[in-house]
Image 1 (tube, rainbow, N blue to C red):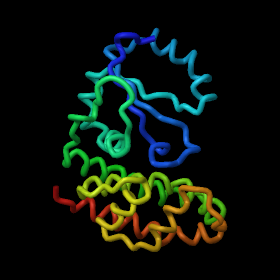
Image 2 (cartoon, rainbow, N blue to C red; image 1 turned 180 degrees about the vertical axis):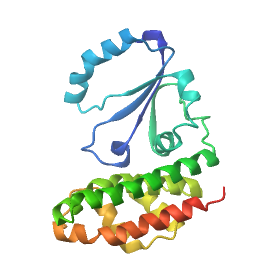
Image 3 (cartoon, one colour; image 1 turned 90 degrees about the vertical axis):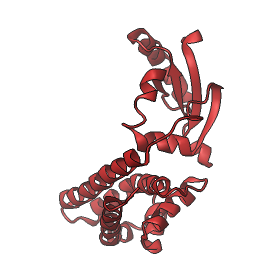
Length: 217
């Protein structure tokens, strides 16, 4: 489809962290990207999904180079765990500025905090709805902790160790962090127990927001 216009292909995401059931995600950089290219990719979408492939992130190489500062969290996560598949490795010389990362962390953490507060109000106090809110937000919380780990300069391999490193850097209590991280995967935790996590979970996110707000890079 892209032939000589294809510059790089990089695999990334949960599967590279050992989660075999997750779709394989990849980033493809090309010289140019037009509507005809998108139409051709759209015709392949069902086939990709059937073979366990997520819809790839396809970007013009120049656009990628100019967006590292705009998406430091997203590209930082790819940088943390990726595998070079084809062409040049776009992350070999890519750098994410610490100031850009800190600002993005602050924005996302405070957005997460607002989401939890609004979601709790919308739940009407129903335990099942609160449990759904806590469970659904767990992956985003884990991603925020991995971003804080990158901000601290210590990012161990693996999604869970990286998230725990971020929690440690922010001084978060280990118990509630462990409980929330466990919700990223199917868990035997009851609805009532998940709902009871909300108050300490909110406290932890508020603490994380204060820490990142005062972070000095």
